[in-house]
Length: 137
Length: 250
Image (cartoon, rainbow over all chains, first blue to last red; front, side, top):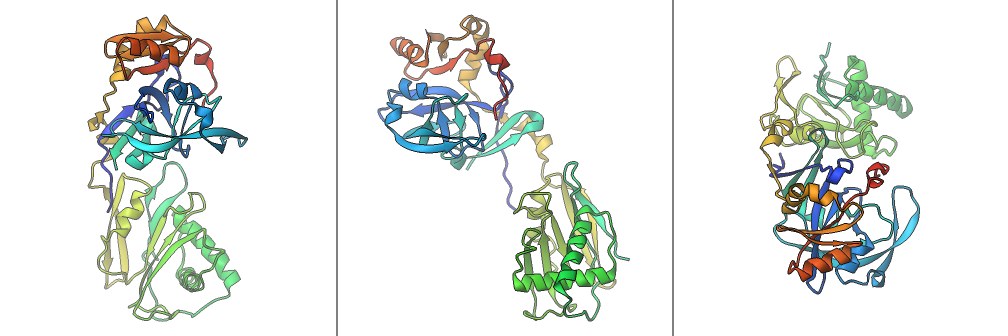
């Protein structure tokens, strides 16, 4: 039988009074090495990580020069986002992973999607305990 | 009469995990009209997964035959309910069920996502290795709380199923022992909480030394942080009172 023993957990966070959600800090490293850490919501429904344009600007990236990609959200409407390759790291990943991320206007939160992150971590939402359980893949 | 026992309840839904002590007759009809059989088997599956009805021997026989038939023909109309049928037989290709035939069926209920297994029906004659990986892995999909002991009485040709605590530690119990990820950034937010709240609507750059940048936007805060020699600041916007009343994120 295959089983996973989760070694880490992150409690859902009521960040500065916002509703309690599965937030996590995530580090982004631009190709030139500029690095910042921002807060994102872990979103298993998001194919990729999606960040606000200001994140790109802070990293010194001209976000609109990325590869244009059509994206659709839960409401179904399509819009354009711009794809860039960055390095991401979320605890407890021991090192950053390189993956494509999207920058998109009007996203209410940074979304920590599956590509890159979910490839590196087993992630389980334990709603009852308001915790995210994590294990390295 | 066959004895059915529900050995798994999946939350409040009427899903059950039932093992039927199938009593195999020496001979079975080879086939039955498919349209009738389909109705029959769907009722059977419903009964099995709910665990609320007893099915009689005749129904079992028809159901077995239909499942075999569906298995062999790869019938599409039941594919949403029959996840997989493992046919292990020394008489492969035959639709006759014999005491030596070994097979098992994994069924899905329509109430759960396709691809997950809800019910395993083991037929008398399955291999003696009753603790093969199939059982626990099937159950593990649904509920880490329960595991099953299963024995076959070869003489009475019955299968006994019993419920018992799962041997491994339960997730609900274990969660308190799972260590917290240390997020220095969030510890800083806790540490400087009162101070941070003065900057509602602004962006903050934090380092382990506290606030190292404040700006109207993220970049401003980051630039201040870098001027302070912090190359990797934690950046966030302090929510306004309006932000706190925002609708739920979906």
